[in-house]
Amino acid sequence: MTMLTDFGYILLFIIAAIVFVAVILFLAKLIRPNRPNEEKLTTYESGEEPDGNANVRFNIRFYVVALIFILFDVEIIFLFPWATVFGNKRLIAETDGLWGWFSLVEMFVFVGVLLIGLAYAWIKGHLDWVRPEVKTTEYESKIPTSLYDKINQKYSQ
Amino acid sequence: MNFWYFLTALTLLSASMVILSKNPIHSVLYLVFTFFCISGHYVLLNAQFLMAVNIVVYAGAIMVLFLFVIMMMDLSKNSPDSKSTLTKLAGAILGGTLLVILIAASRKVDLKDVKPIDAQTGMVEGLGQILYRDYVLPFELVSILFFVAMVGAVMLGKREAGERNF
Image 1 (cartoon, rainbow over the protein chains, first blue to last red):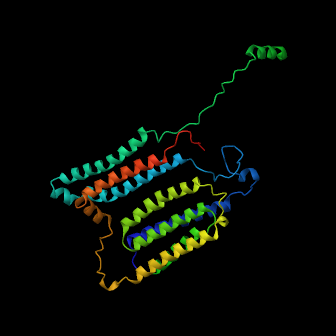
Image 2: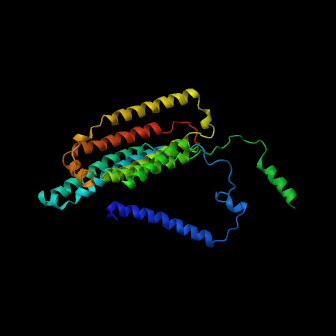
Image 3: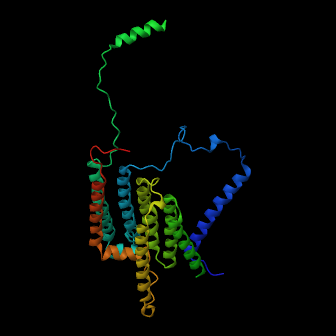
């Protein structure tokens, strides 16, 4: 048996998680009663009857949100190496505490420039959710409302 | 080494499932699995930072974009059978050329001159030391690049006046 490396333990954890989920689901399948009907098997859409395919075109405005997410995701990547050297005791001791402030300001500048981009998108209104306009008809009926009231009164008795 | 064979087989299997599955959503999910397998390869190569980048950026963010693109296209009309022979031929030539280039490039590799690398090369700490000591200005310029990319993407993706909503 060779010695496990640190990533070997992570692999063991991944395998254990998969096995655990599989065992639990299998046990639940053994225990639970199985009486399916058509109502139970339909897709749940808040009580509505499912109609058509869910694979429809998405709105382009989701795409803008996804793009901004990607840029901040890549920014997170740069935070990883920063986090390892930020609190480095040796570097802080060598520079008499200046290193900590330097790296902190550096990262604030980095994140700040990206926040300007977010602020730009926000101010320009690209993040606003455009609501569909409610159309009101401008047609004015020649029949006065009082006529309807009369009919209602006549037949309500 | 045995684990390497297992991981490579898994990678190749899931990569071929990407192109073999008919449902594009399934293809994307297989691609995510392929990226995780490649991250495993990075770990075996002692490049832990690349593994983190691969999972966070590729399996996380880029795949989200892939899903968005697939959902934005109307794929119900566009079945795989509708591709013309010319498209298939062009794709085969393109892929084959890339394969030939990769094989030719890897044949040129001379492994005799490779020096044994420092075990700490792929670690996050090493990158942090270099990035925040020697390359501080390029690092800050990267944020400007991100800023430009964000503004450009938002400009391109914005709604035109009078565009249909759904």
